[in-house]
Length: 289
Image: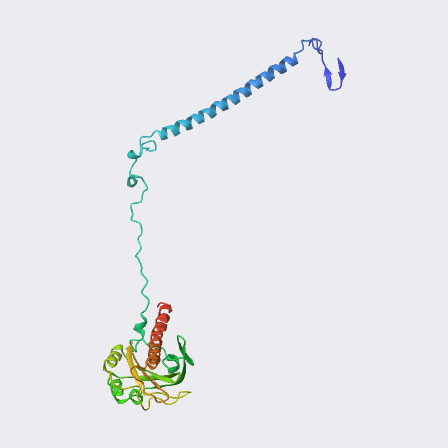
């Protein structure tokens, strides 16, 4: 026996060990042990593999069994599929419905100027005839004096005054305009209802609103012949008195004087209409109660 690095070394024959007995073949025993270990590992691995295959087979069998159930319609033609109502979970409740809502129509401007109960906007000469001029096309009229009175018949000729009083005129507003030697006084009479104003239009066959001089407009239509017009809209009746500041008579062929009077009649109508539109717009934009 010799001792070297790593511990005792025995001869390969195995017959020279201590005690004189046979020496085990350690290499063979190690190989045999290794072989047995390898066999056990393979058995374990193989057993695991078989177990995995078994589980997979069980899953596959379960899936196939579910897909082959007679109640399934997944592999049937469309004509054999169950109706929607027969499918479990399909809702048979009616779908929610909503009432169709239509926004209310916008207020009618004329409604606001047809009755004193709705026509609540301030009413003044300056509010009805604003500014210092009035333009119609290329014609620019200079505005003169304005006034307002509750004694309607006091500023009209007798025939017209009687009609205004009979139909309960509550106020008469006047404004005068001048263009090229022709002056016009426009008068707007106010009533409680449109029916009262309509009666005045039917009855006012004679008589004029007195002319209103002042603020650059001299006296006119105090003598001689002047042209008058009358009309009504809503609870308002409106009139014009047109004449030359020189005192010249207006004739039925005087296109210039007629044109000036018609311009101011249109102004009165426009201003009454705009009054209704302004109040209707305010009502439409007001918060709903």
